[in-house]
Image (tube, rainbow, N blue to C red; front, side, top):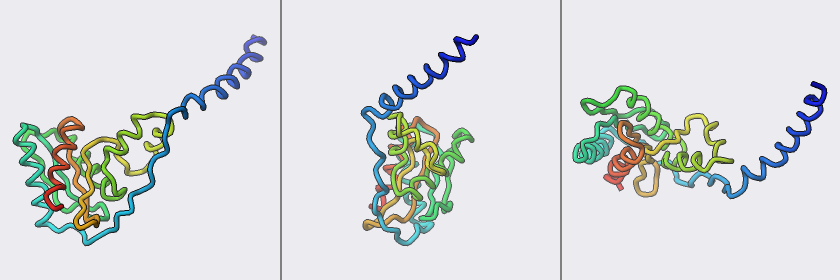
Length: 170
């Protein structure tokens, strides 16, 4: 028992000195926020057009999805849930849209950062950052006017439909 008490601190010290270099090895710092200025918040008519484009892609692929559109402050402007979409996707879609608008970047950036591990894991600590594909900032004339978030398919499917929706106003 005495030997365990003596060896445990030595072993812990050895591991602590070894692990950090291995974790940081090959990791890049997360990029600073894009310098996209805020524009006029998205209106209802544009929000419906963005949603319609996303729904068109979803229907063509037989994906059942929830689509959320938020303004520059992350407040819900428009929401649509396709028939048969799992109810758990409702809040996820809203969270993705909010994340894309508030952080001025696609949620896929957070997903990729977390997937790298190491320093990327710290992204899980960013309140409101959703590390799942499917959230896209809506940018018109170089200004952020809102975000679209989609949930219901795979992350890749959500991202495809969200990009199609956001592209309508560009």
